[in-house]
Length: 287
Image 1 (cartoon, helix red, strand yellow):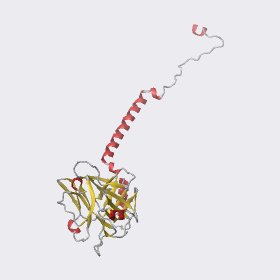
Image 2 (cartoon, rainbow, N blue to C red):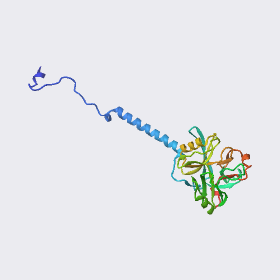
Image 3 (cartoon, rainbow, N blue to C red):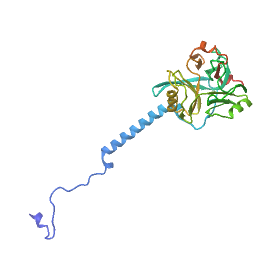
């Protein structure tokens, strides 16, 4: 009763538990546990992303379509990096020449010539007259003329140009400077795929600009031009033109003691003007 005797006439008291404001989130243990776990998850995802990117950094894009054919100017061995991947259910093989210069040649390349680290058939040959389809320049000498296909590759002063244009001064520049030039179907221009009239399916080969390098990308399976070009776009290719596909013969050297081939050698020998884009070992290339 003494408790109530302390109250004055104009006072009142509430009897019961005192209301306590909830603690802020940042003062609760579960909040910090969640934060720590989230940071760990972000770190793990970032590490995995960087790891994958280091494997497939070939898929990133750059703005230029002019690439030095000598990828690394050092004293390392000349060889071809081989990378297999799958894009849109299309199995692809990417061949990346290291320490080698690109050039064109007429005739079949010799697989025993170890100065050649990679070779792939370049321009198409007409079945009726055995002529090269489109413009073709060999060491500054025009062998063929024409604009049957908008895609082109020019090699001038050890620089490789891959692009799409009906008219380009690079043909004249190749003739003036002892360079090389040929035309083919365009597949990708400025990162966007292009459609071509042929609708059949075949093993496809292409010459591409990928992550600042000139590489060759081929399909393991028979694909339409559309599906192949779409896979190249999704791979991250910025520029790409076709290389003769189907059973066209080619090879590369993953090392000095190994040789990887594709296509049929005998099937190409029947063509009078069969031609190749090749990469020669940097140390064995004549200036």
